[in-house]
Amino acid sequence: MNQFGIYQHSNSKKRVLNSLNFVVFQGESVGIIGPNGLGKTTLFRAILLPKHRH
Image (cartoon, rainbow, N blue to C red; front, side, top):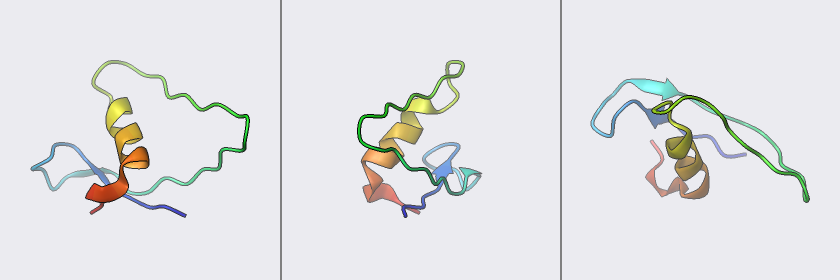
């Protein structure tokens, strides 16, 4: 299980997401929809590139 935090800004201490747990089975697709600036790209980067965990 991967747990990570996503912060409002790179220099901010305000955490906007503490942890996220989900399972994607082979053959399934996952999508995140929402308005511009919501943090969709940041979320995917945190999932795919977890080297900057807090």
